[in-house]
Length: 212
Image: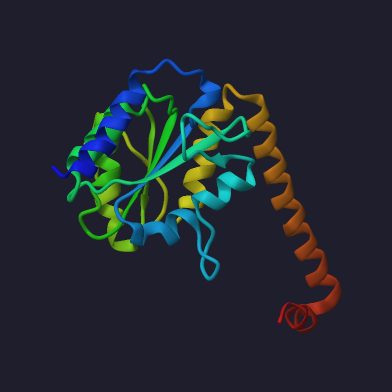
C-alpha cells in the first residue's frame, strides 16, 4: 500500500471516530470506479446531466472538507474508489460511510466487471446504496446482486436519476428536501405543458423551426 493511499484511508477512519453534528457532514456520498466515469456521474455539457447537476439543482453543495463545510444545509462528497485497483480504499470508504454521517451512497462503475456498487452495498449495509452502470455493458454486473444483498440501481448512464432517488430517501425525514423535489417536479410539468402548447399553436413545421 502506498503512503498516499494509506493516508487517505486513515483520514476516512479518523473522521468516522469523530462526533460531528449532521450539519457538518455530507448526507450523500458519490463514488466512481475511475475519473473516466466523471462525465456520467457529474454530467457533461455535450451529454446528459448527471448526479452532480441534479444535486446542485436541488440546492446541495459539494463538501470537500469536514473542517470547513459549505454553508448549505445539505451537502455531498465525491471520491474515486476502484474496486479492483484500490480494494482497501473501497472497503474503508464503505465501512466508515455511516459513521462519517452519510445517509445514502451513489456508486457508479463502468466496464463488464462493474463491481464497485455491489461491493459498496455489501460492506456499507444497511446503508442504502444506489448503483449507476456507467455503460450499457455494465448493467448486468451492477444489478446482479444475490437475494438478501440489496442494491437499488438506475438505468445505464442515468446518475441524475440516482441523485433524485437519493434525495427522495432523505426527504422522508427532511421536509425542506421534499419541498424542493415537489418544486422540481412542478417545473417538469410546466415545461411539458409549454412544449405541448407551442407545438399545437405553431404547428409541427413551425415548432421544429423554432427549436432549430
